[in-house]
Image 1: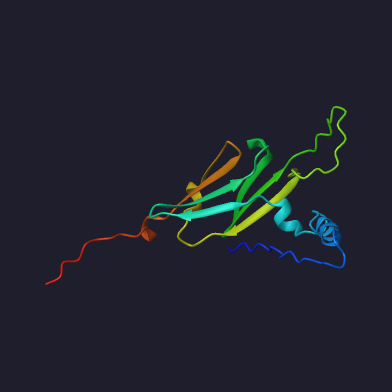
Image 2: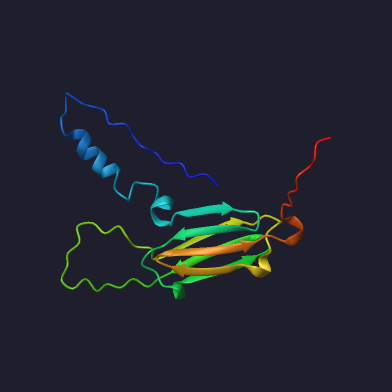
Length: 146
């Protein structure tokens, strides 16, 4: 999986000073930006000889908000949280951090043992451990040169 980030270059406009700033603030708004990247938590995927690890950054949620399931060769991670509108007299000009609902799906390799997947949620990070099947674990040995 590849995450591509777009970073527009600033161009100086001598004819209309300040126009680029207004234009960038409008286009940089979350309404116009890539909604998928803005509303889906970031994920790290790593692999060791024993297992695959998935770490999903989702601060502000509770472990009860998550649903993790495996269907065939797909691992599905979703979360849904009811929006609490307890603003206590605050008037927001902009409100960005809100994961009301999201779903992430990953195709599992054949070497993953889906019966032994474990998940934990601490400090805003959902961690999934996907052990490898015994027959697919890499066995290394030293070969003597004669």
